[in-house]
Image (cartoon, rainbow, N blue to C red; front, top):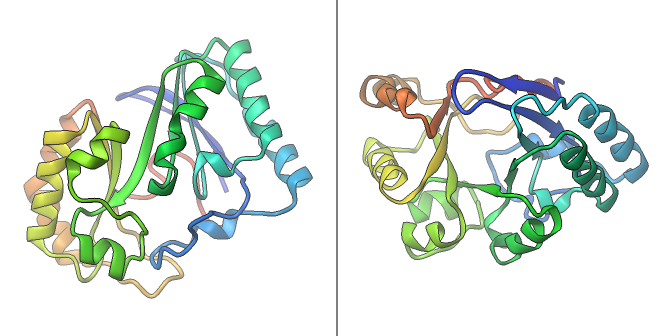
Length: 231
């Protein structure tokens, strides 16, 4: 399991994959990342400090991910992140947050006192597929409502059951309403969901041009940022 890396080329930054308490939502049917969660706080803090100590501050930007939301990181870990931010002169942070925490984002901004970009895993704007199939637990009325809270979203492409029409709408909304986005091409894991190769090939033909967009990143493999791997 790789837990530290540098993202080079586009949106250069350091990125760390930390351990956290169990995801508060924890019901997404397509996700097995939560297997990386833990309840042993002492162990988590020790691992997280070792990873954070690798941060150099070279780019002035640090992305912090964990198998859930930043609000599930321990208090001691958050305090250590703040120390790293100050010591390494980090000017911008990227965090992940589930939709259920949308009203708590300001807490993090006030704690770190530097600009924070919050990424929210929307997966798709098709309400039925998002909430009834993927069990994402993100209920909202429109992309405009999401954009009130999050400037950056994550979308999923290539799960059996998705359609071209869904993806076309997702790509339209991403470019119209959001400043940033990350598109995750589905990689099969321990869940029952299968990968739709035909749909992914179609997406490559139609939307590979988004790779040239400075504010949109496509993860053709879920370890493209250099972190993650087998749990």
